[in-house]
Amino acid sequence: MILTRGMVARLALLMAFTAIAQLVCFSKMDIFGTSPDVALLVVISLGALGGSLTGAVAGFSIGLLIDCLLLETLGAFALAMLSVGYVAGRYRETIGFPTRGAVVLLGGALTLLGALVIAAIQIGTGIDATVSFLVVRDALIKSLLGALLAIPVLWIVRLVVRSALVDERRAARRRPMVGRGGAAQAPPAK
Amino acid sequence: MYRKQVRRRRAVLLLLVAASLTLLSLYYREGNGGPLHGGEKVVSTIFSPLQNGADRALKPVRDLVNWFHETFDARGENDQLRDQVADLRDQLARSQTTQAEAKELKSLDETLSGGIVPDGTDPVTARVVGRSPTVWYSTVTIDKGSGDGVHVDDPVVAAEGLAGKVTQTTSNTAQVTLITDADSAVTARVSSSGATGVVEPDVGNPNDLQLDYLERGTDIAEGSMVVTAGFSTGDLGSIFPPGIPIGRITKASVEEQQAYQRVHLEPFADLRGMSFVKVLTTPSGGGKQ
Image (cartoon, rainbow over all chains, first blue to last red; front, side):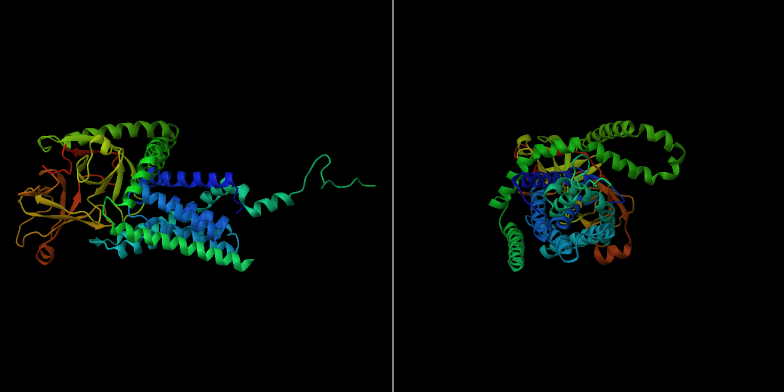
């Protein structure tokens, strides 16, 4: 990812909007008894587009902002989201840009991973109450919603950061010019 | 070059993980007035106008999605009317939301009628503007804070029943920890038998609460109403005034009462769907009477 000042500002806005929208909108939605974790999908998308470093930094930033806005334990969401962003970025660096099928699988699997990390942190910090089996159901439905929403979220995030993507720039350079005086115009037949 | 990149990547990752773990441990160690809690409140205060604006702006989207979900649930009944309803979807969603809000506010007032609110208490109506995205934190953020007279430990009531208590405040927002949160415990009384116990949550299952520490041999019938006990012993007193409805007993097996001194209840308040709450503020704060 090529980071200019403008792109950094755009990323910061995207991350702030994501954190706020997650808390005021997506978390309040009721889909099969749970709510979609779109903030996690944005982190996965940034990791898949920009690599592990971008994914980890984006995950940490969005997570920390969510921690602050919820007035909850600082670092809990930050740690969960940075793990997810890093894994998504490593996927891109080792296997390549994910195909559509892989995006769906990544969305589902990494949403589940995020839920597991949050659960591990909660259990690690001491939950003084019984934990219902419905927690597992909630994580599985969240993961399913993550798989369903992964492609549209990746598409939107890609639109926002398009000009900073190395692959997109290469593709734009390779694209032939057409029309009058275009370099790729075929020579007249003799 | 590649090695340098790998080293940099690992260094940044380690730094971020270390930062997260340090924040986690420091946050737990320091008190409520510590610098991390303070910093968190500052960020929350700065973002709260944006949160309020976004809450209003994104409400139609949220309502539309929730509307779809409700429609899916009631698909059998709605099949014949679907075409007609599709044309009116947006209009209907808006008008239903307004109506539901009015109904919720009316119900909220009714819950607090009948002498439940102690003298000197000033109920402040607040809108729920944020909700935790996981089942681990049963907390919501409301749009009223210390500037509106809201204090930590003030009881919070939703339409139909008790919602929780205020656990953190900024000048214009507050965090409410719901009765379904792992940290929550409310002394309660079964209104029919007078038996007292402590209402605790079953994490991940917002429709089930447990009334623990009941006296063995107490006769508790399913369907009985559970209200706050509001005990007071000298200087020590419950932060919840007595008589606020909490829920209805759904399961009271003799075996579980004998073995665990426990029965199950369903909360009256719709803690997932509530849009408005009332905070019972007092001039001294802390909900104590």
